Length: 214
Image 1 (cartoon, rainbow, N blue to C red):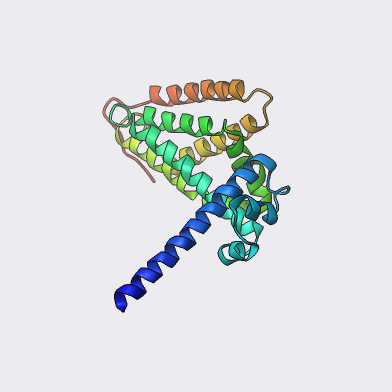
Image 2: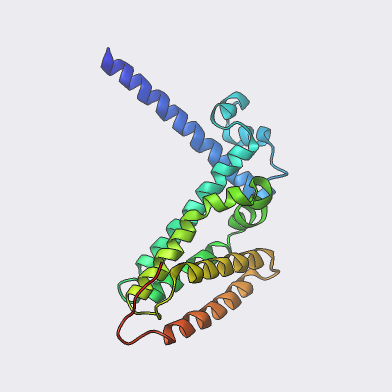
């Protein structure tokens, strides 16, 4: 009896998970192409092949659905940044931070990423909700800067101000890319400036390592 109940529960959970995945996939596609304001829940249900009742079982309204899509987008960006960082960190931890920044900007070339994370999220969710979601990206930057200082790749300094300045600059550059008539060119220009900033900070690196301050 217990086994049957457990199997039924797993089956129900699997069905629920599949429905959620279908809704998120459909919503992501519509939010990316049509934008938050122009996307209706009816359109999402039609695209996902589920009823309106099923949608409301998982998400209380369109804002909650968009929040879930936005959170997934930011997680995907964070994964790309982490992969780029890890590919280089053994050789140079400061260069690894640069590669992570580059991966972030390259991700922003995707029109869907631009629409969801840069253009619609602040208005649809509010600045505070957006800040709560991007906290992982901020932590990545903070950790990268701290490790670079500990490795002696840049001069010792308080971690938080530099991490915040770099992340804020990246965020503004990403918005510029999203609004640019030529996103590829805008990305390259941003990367060129970022390269100069990173090289200048690397030039100040101590020869004997340094102490890091949080």
